[in-house]
Image 1 (tube, helix red, strand yellow):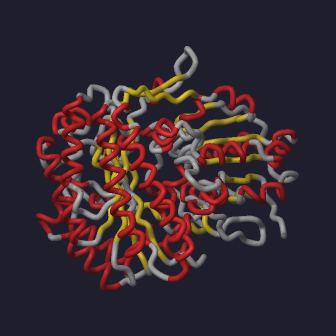
Image 2 (tube, rainbow, N blue to C red; image 1 turned 60 degrees about the vertical axis):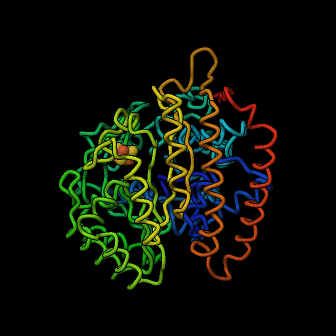
Amino acid sequence: MKSLNVDIAITTDRSMMTNHHRREFLGFLATGPAMYVPEEVWMYLCCPKPEIDEFGRPVEAPYGLRKIEAALQDAGFEAHIIDPDYLGKYVDKVKILMIGHHDFFAFGPPSSEWWLITGKEPVNRKSFFKLMESESIKKMRQRGVKVVVGGPAAWQWLWEPELVEKWGIDVIVEGEADEVIIDVARKILNGEEVPRYISVGAYESPPIDRIPLIKGASVNGLVEIMRGCPRGCKFCSVTLRPLRHIPIDRILKEIEVNKGFGINGAILHSEDILLYGARGIEVNEEALIRLHDAVTKSVKSVAWAHASLAAIVYSQRKYKLITKITDMIYSRLDQNYLGVEVGIETGSPRLAKIIMPAKSAPFKAEEWPDIVEEAFAIMHDHRIIPAATFILGFPGEEPDDVIKTIELLDRLKNYRSLIVPMLFVPMGILKSEEGGVVGMKIMQEHAEAMRKAFWHTVTWAEDIVYNFYMKGLRYEPLKFIIKIFLWYAKKKMSELEKKLLPKFSGKELSLKV
Ligand code: SF4
């Protein structure tokens, strides 16, 4: 294999450096421990190694790493994303090693939830430890290579001070790093002091014209169309960032970059795609039609990263927009469904009013369960397949709030969807002074909500996997493994229901860190 001039190597572990067999939802499996199959099989199932070029660079890499690579290359640095298996080639060249991740230590959702429930370390955490303990990184550290970490999970390093020391982390960058990373790299290469912890505040976030365009392909063609979110949910950090709508010409330029590397699909990333071009939370029909018109003329498949349930209902009621957009996508492209992530969070209007008063806007928080059901019905009718989450254990949650969530799950059972529970983990006290235990008391109502979500998801998973996500012969081996996994999971859950569930009430689940 040839090697490049690389002063700055950018990388991450295998749970991130993968295209998940071009099926993003498989990435969810990397947030849990291997179940019923050997870990290598599990990792192959969710995180196969991507195609690598002659220099050890992945053809597709996480979008966030691509932005950092582009920012550094634009500033004149020899910076490249290197696959973790090929770092060894650059041990003697690299001066700075940059590592990004969206869940370094599996403290984020849903990794921490699977960890709490199963008591086993998720594979993404194990994979990251494997990277950090690898011979290549050890040798780089011995050579005095500076190590910079960042990305959406940068905060997690604050809860692992021993690992910061053990692994010789020199700089932790939290927040949008598109601009600040240039200064960090320049100072390190000039031998100047750099603070160990750098936080990029909301008002230091770069404006659109200073956000670099990616130069290499992003995983599965992900391109951002917005940054920030105006809804202000109390448990969410995204909402702290200023709202920016990326102009269509910039979106198309990044799509062209992806196409240049053979990635002909696009995942449109935003926190709420239906607010693209919106004035506040007033849906902008014209901007959304223009966006989808331009994108569907340019790619072979489209997916949405996130949408809000309220905007789905509002845009359909007012403009029949879900019908118009899906008609456009299904008639122009060779696809018959659209994937998206959505947040239910709670079925309790009382709790919705407290923790996410604007999530239902322009509708009232009191209407939240009805809005959720209507949005699910609209998505079902338009073959939009949501991967939905709800959260248990919010501060101030009462048993009746969870009962309302259970009732809502009942109302959603006829709508094609995957629904995953998440446990609210108060990150601020994730690591207590006494010895690092965090947890929540799982009550009978929580167990029932999780049970309902499990059966909902495994029931619909078969329809979704076989009829939508994995059509075609090339997916047969993967479908077979998933079939066995679903069969085994259902069998185990049935046994659990008979034997253990009655004893589940009041169980304290805790995660030692
Ligand atoms: S709608 Fe979603 S992204 Fe926006 S603030 Fe609420 S949880 Fe965060």
